[in-house]
Every structure is written in structure tokens, then in C-alpha cells.
Length: 94
Image (cartoon, rainbow, N blue to C red; front, top):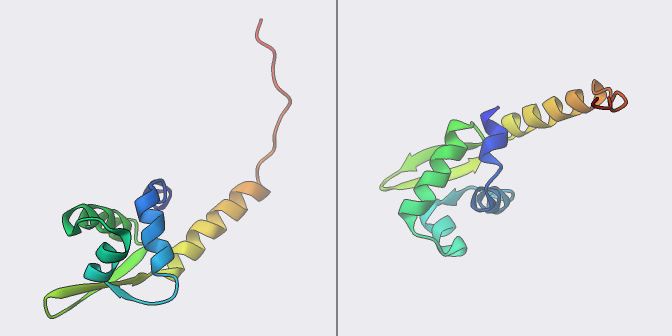
């Protein structure tokens, strides 16, 4: 799942943390994280491709918000994975 790959980077986790309370403009995210907009664009693209954030254009700026339904889908996948995992005893190599 590309969602888990998208969650493997600290900058992307920080972006998601910022979006927990409200929609933000790319310029606000860039300022808070103190990274260039070009570097941030790469991370936002990864989050968009994983469907973890929504984006909308308003004038010259792009605004981002969490896609909660995709986060729920990842959470459900992990819960199902955990419920259906059976750990067998370790087999000894000969």
C-alpha cells in the first residue's frame, strides 16, 4: 500500500500532524516546517498520490487537508492484519 510508504518519511508525518486541526496553504506548511516549497512539493505529491491528503486550488495557492477516509482505510487494514496474524513457532535450521 502506497499509504504506508508515504508515512515512512518524517517530513510527511510532520505535514500530516500540521493538517490534523485545519486546512493549510502550502506557504504556511513551508514556513512552519522551515523547508523550501520545492522540497515540500515532492512530499505533498507523495501524500496526494497515496490519497492521504486532499488539495484544492484557490488563486495562486494550493490548500491541503487530511483525507480521513484513507487514514481510516489504513487503520482498518492494520487492524485486520493484526487480527489474522498467527505466529508459528520458529523452525530451526539444520
